[in-house]
Structures are given as structure tokens and as C-alpha cells.
Length: 436
Image (cartoon, rainbow, N blue to C red):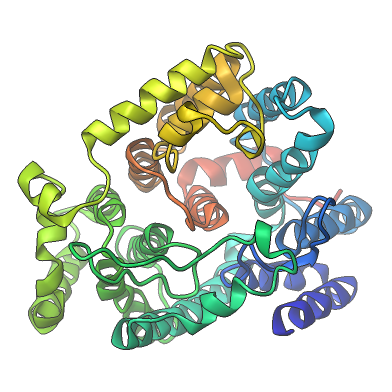
């Protein structure tokens, strides 16, 4: 299988050139979805390639760190990440299904959501590595968008249908496809796990490229191709037929608006031309956009609404009362099957998951995390871009679920923006950039 082969090649290559292999891992992870596993035997916790590769690189980092050129300035998310880990571990100890049943997901979540971010902070040198990241992410997203157009044309996704069959234990497979309802229509997801996450991933890449071009005045090699690769994702965003990515874009796009910068006007002209050219293809999605602001349009489009969210909130609060301090822990819904868990539906807000899985301690931990993400870090680094991208995520993830959103991509771009800030460069001088 191609995913397994690439994973093995990356591991072998990492022993020769660890840093370059890590950068290739970041590109590969764009395509590495949940069903790509190493071990999928009934009765044994899943061992996913994603988690396994991160663990391998983490262990190699610990072994090689004295020889590597690594980041010496403090990790901005260190304190909130430690609090999150403590919250997750406490919930795992007192998990509804027991510590043994929940610990595998705890370990996997720590590696897939936190350790990879820490490694990116330690290993990425913007001056040296940004050209590689721009080049290969541009190529990757160009291909991802082309496949999105292909999927939109044929109204089917052969890739994700195949991926859903390769887990080995079909009962634990994540089903990527879903029936299109009459009102909403087909929803493009390209190589990603879900249409909502796909749209947000396209948004993130668009904001990343145009922030570099407009805000940071970055000089791209092959600028036309790089900008085109970002813009090509815009119609795909609408093809997802999801409201969350549109709201994300509306908020995050504020990060590039600076009326004193002439490139903003170039950007607006490009957007206007693109809108005129693409308007025949986007007309079918107008009602979906209007539904963000109009409840009648929302009823016509279908999907989740405010009443469903309230029902989920009531169910989440009621379930939280069974384990108010630390919550029910990971995987509790695999064994708890009642009217309340059924009412949770898809846990269409990050807070419903936090309430049920992590309890009061989890709420406190995530408020502390939000304080860092939305206030302390953007203010300290004086980065409007970091602020608006963070606000976009927290608002959208609070209003809906974001399945398929690549959190490491979100953090990768934020880390790059931080390392392009003036404050970071001052810290770099103070702490020194040295080997250790």
C-alpha cells in the first residue's frame, strides 16, 4: 500500500537526514487520514500511522537533540499544553471505560495534537525551512484542489471510499462518505476526512499564503503558481457545502486587511475577478452562504440548527453530572449507550466534548488555553494574523464540529507567523539560537 510504503521510506530517510524527513512528514500528513493504520486487530488498540510516525520522530529527536540545531526560545503554548495534558490524564484515570480502555486514546491524542506542535516549534527555522514548506504545500494543495474539482464533477470520491476499506477491522473504520440530503446536495471533501474540515484546511492555506504576501511582504519563488494554488481552493471551499468554513474565512480574512497596504487592493481585485469568473459555478451555493445569517434560509438548506445545539448542550450538561470533576474520559460513548448519548449526535461544538469527556477541570484547562491562544500569545508577539486565525478557529469550533480539520496545519502556520514577528526575533537574540 502506498501510504505504508511512504511511511517506511520516511522512517528510513529520517536516520539519514532527520530534519528534512520531518519536513516531508508535514507534507505527507496532509494525506494521512484516520484509517491508515499499522495494527488493526480486534481487541487491540488501533496503532495509526499518524501517531506512530510522530512517536518515531519524537524518540529520534530526544536521541539527536544534542546534535540538532533546535529552537532555544520558550515554546509559547507550553503552559496551556501542560494543563491540557494534566486534564486529559486525570479524565483517563477516572474514565468511564476504565484506565486501560482509555489510555491508548490519551497517548494518541497527546502525540497527534500536542507533541507534533512542540516538535514543529523546536525544529522549524523559518529562514531556512519556509521555502521548502511553501513549495511543497503549494504543490500539495494544488493537487488536492484539482482532485476537489474532479470530485465535484463526478459527485463521488473514490479515494476516501478506498481508505475506508483498508483499516482491517471494518467495525472500527471511520466512514468518510455520507449520503447527500436533498436540500444540501453533494459535499466535496477531496483527500480530507470530512467536508467541514476540508473547507477549513483550504481556508488556512489561503490565509497563510496571502498573509505572507500581503502582511509579511514575502517574496515567493514562482509567485503566480503559489498564489494560484491558494486561490484554487476557494471554489473548493464552497463545493464543501458547509457553513463552518465560510464563517472561518470571513473571520480569518480580516488578518490581511490593511487599507494602507497596496497589495490589499491587488488582493481585492483578484478576488473580484475570481468571483466574476466563478459565479456560474458558485450560484448553487448562495443559499448556503445566506443561511449563516438567515434562519429561514438555514431551514431550507437543512443541517444543524440552534434547537439541535441546545438539545446537545442539555444532554452534555446532564452527562457531565455523572462525573462532574474530570468527566467520563475518552471513549465513554463506546460503552455508554442511552438516550443522552444519542442526543449528543455529533458533539457539534468543542465544548460539548469537553463537558462530557473532561468535566469541570477540562473546562478550566480549555479556558486557560483560550486565554493564551486568543489574548496572551497574539498580544505578546503583536500579531494580528495570529489573533484572527485563532479567533476564527475558536469561534467556528465552538459553534460546530470540525471533523477533518488538520490541527497541525493550523499550528504550523501560527508558528511560522510567530517566528516572523519582531518580538520573536528579539527573543531569538536574547536566548540565542544554538545547538544543544
